[in-house]
Length: 172
Image (cartoon, rainbow, N blue to C red):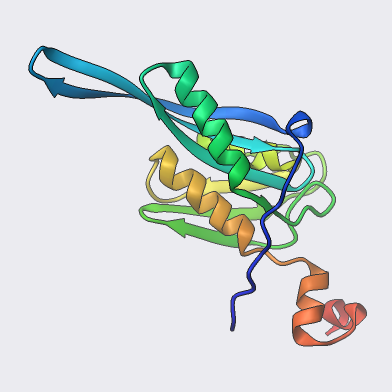
């Protein structure tokens, strides 16, 4: 199966909402003592199927968050959004992070923890079941969640790939 390359998405700055997933303080030991810097993982999304993540590093927390937001805006992807949930079950993996995402009935809410919740809410999902089964490292969990969402296909994409009508995808 050949992988379909997705075009980068461009979104205006006003419609994107950003969420800080994690801030990490890093110490570098130098001759005069310890020198601290910060790294921040940030997720941005428009709440309508567009989401991206970024990493920013700086000597100040606010600068790290700003850099993370700018990086996230460069890495936006379009994800399938079907009645507030995902079209089908999907697993995502990145490094030690392994996540499982399932569709949920209306009214369920976003049942996900920490880093996954930030990604799913930014993408615009309102009803979804998610479980992180591997590492709890927020870097890997965010990237595994994005991987799962990126590999998800809606019914139109399936019908185009199989070269059949949309009704045949559902009825066999």
